[in-house]
Length: 265
Image 1 (tube, rainbow, N blue to C red):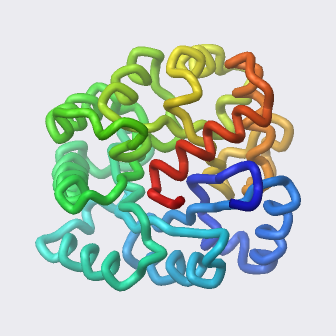
Image 2 (spheres, rainbow, N blue to C red):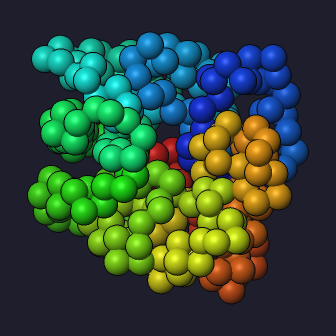
């Protein structure tokens, strides 16, 4: 694997990258980011995510999902279409993002939970890793995960990742105990987020992966600007501070977790 870091969650299909997508990958490589996982939030984005990963077989993979913003698109044929897309694209290594968002969408929680639970359990039954979005909904997320995944995965594996983890230390412990990695993004670097840093401190490096969620959530030094995978180093440096580890050790352990999560040797 070339590059120290893995960006486990990027949205490089966003139109903000249309003018310089190849340069973004070049800057990522120069910053030590050897691998990127492209995330598709709804079926209209799936083909582009697959194309981005397929064009860069040594450096990129993708995940296909239905973000809670689009939960009302879930219907009786969705799982069949998802299975067909996954079967047709070896680059697609996960399902997501999927999940619950009680802060930013008018879609009712009941509608979100119906879609999320169905896709979550399909992923479980298919043994495909899951990329989970959660905002202001950990009180519902943790019980759903516990019911759907009553046993921990085999040692060194994950059922999925709680992307852009922003819950409490107790939420972090619960998700990690159920076999889900915790995604560390730009917010871990924000000055006000002491409680989030404490959650990652307690969870430790064996539970964490790095992600940018670019073009969103830039780290502290570039807030207000477009984010991109090259920013991973700043997130890793903050975690090195939180855990009292050398930066190279953070890179090694989080990249090993990412490889286990996405089954990308």
